[in-house]
Length: 300
Image 1: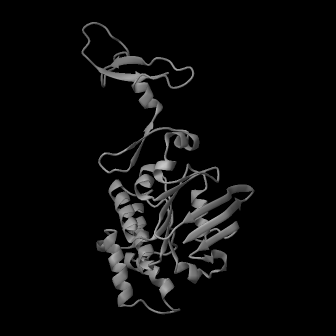
Image 2: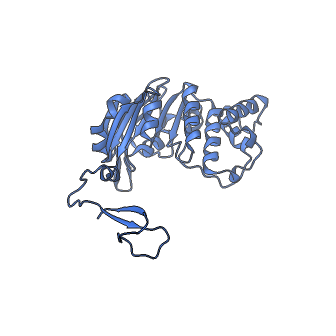
């Protein structure tokens, strides 16, 4: 459904994407993961035509993207971008109805079917009661859910998600991903949260400095070795007994200090100071008879 071959993107004088190949099969949910600056969003922007200057080939449903009109690509691919900007305010229902535009002729008005599709999309993202609200009055997370509803109303076989859960509370992060997964579409998503990627993605591309460092199933890609090599973070990867999916737990220097491990060159044993809350007494005093106070851990 989506095939990217030898993709190279240069912005200014910097080569952001370097000869990357990506394949997304029909009804597959494929994630692009990697640290900030690795090229996830840049690659997606080429697929949904925000970036038009690139080398290589992007094929969508067997046709070359560069040869498609905007209208043709809009019938095949919808997008939930990382940021949404609008110079004008609209009612929420009107924003969602914009997703019907590729299906309309010039100057054709929305009909009952369009409104039914938009209403159903709002219900799926739990925003139906906001239909007549001003889009500008919504929080960032609420706006993101409306943008997803607009993409759903577009009814395309492919969907692009550019870090879609960034502004959402945990409940709505899971709800958004559940809704997209339930649609059974061909999805290419740039994701920041590795636990969400592990649960929802069929395949993952792990990017480092604009190149594919690892590719495969979540089990093949999300290894402690790969996470350390790409993110520079120590991780413990287990399979949750509750969900059955991989769970990534990160080990911070704070955690190591708390359990008594030496974490870096020049590490010193932590010093404990005893103080009394809201007291002018000298910090660190341990004179006999002083009431018990709170211990503060300070590592130098």
